[in-house]
Length: 145
Image (cartoon, rainbow, N blue to C red; front, side, top):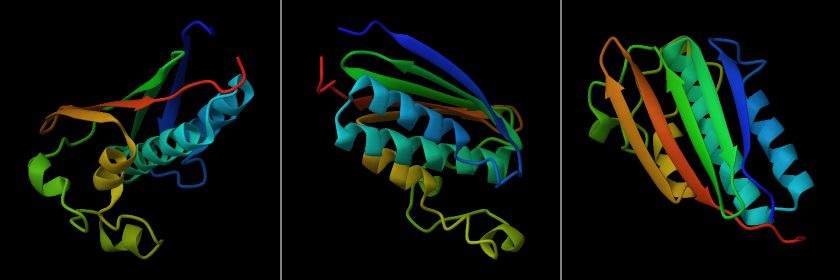
């Protein structure tokens, strides 16, 4: 059984060309470790959505990922403006992304709903003008151990 593997990534703010780097690296690591394809897909989607939210709304942040034999724990932390109404932010299609971001094809209001959809658990700690931290867990198993 593989022991816990920890990774930490910086997510650049408003740099869409680098958005998805952290989730792509974790996807590669999970493939190399032989995790099941469905779990890899769910981790990659949840993490990518969180990265895009950081790029759009928070000016970047940190992605910390612990890979366990039975799950992947992801912590996405930023020091952005915070989320004033988490319940509203969880509604599909609700967005505070500016028009210039939506014109680029991002900010459709599906980030947090998709994270919740693809994760086994999601909790959000946020404070206006302080930042937001997402705690995401995806259950996963290795197929080739």
